[in-house]
Length: 299
Image (tube, rainbow, N blue to C red; front, side):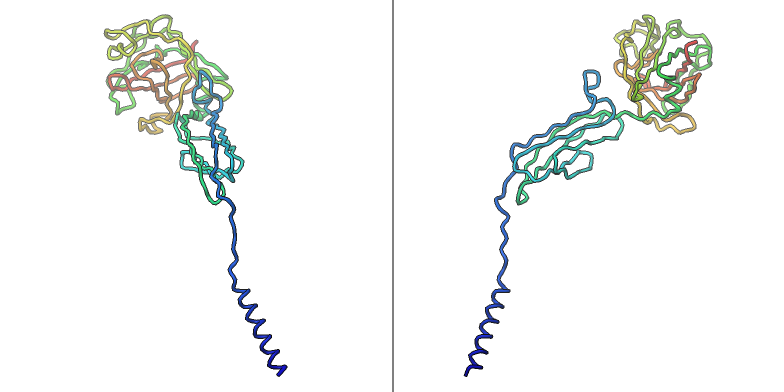
């Protein structure tokens, strides 16, 4: 009888243990809290009156804050994202030129609750000018260029599919005097950003198709074109489809009216060749043709 009671007791205990071991554990996540008071700032390095989109480094300091937040997921608008628990991230943009991005922040709270905020920014990233172009262009810091009026083809024109003045190439000293007295100064700063100033002695030469661009009317001739002020140049890879056989494949854009010393109505100049003693430029004029000029250092 006692053995039977013991066996029954053991069976009951085993049953209790089995039931206890099968009991489902319950977990609690706590209160689900959606992040509140979400803010987002994006400070572009070097922004000022002269550089509204930054100093060309492409550095943007992003700061986001919220309450009841665990972490932040930042979409930078360029196809990249990052999880940033601190809410502060320094983004280094590297695509040359002036580009706009939409920064989107997802603030993540408990239970996966999300709050979202976005901000649109425009950032300038300077093109890294190769030394073989930068050094002869600006010298050790600043260099003055003038028209190489003794060189055949110092001014010329051809179809926009070509990279040589096959229609017309000026002979030495055959153009108007105002085309020969301009002084073009290229300068670089500590970041190797290049700017340009022009002293046109009061007038610049313009082709007839471009006089309206500069606020005048008439044919080829000398006009009182305003070339004052310092103009920051935007360098980039050439978009003409040129090959290394005919070009450095680098171009720069001149803000404002775009004139250097020979007005064609164009604002983008491709550097076909450059050395310490010569600079050969090509641009597409208002007439759709390719125009050429050759410069030399001021004697």
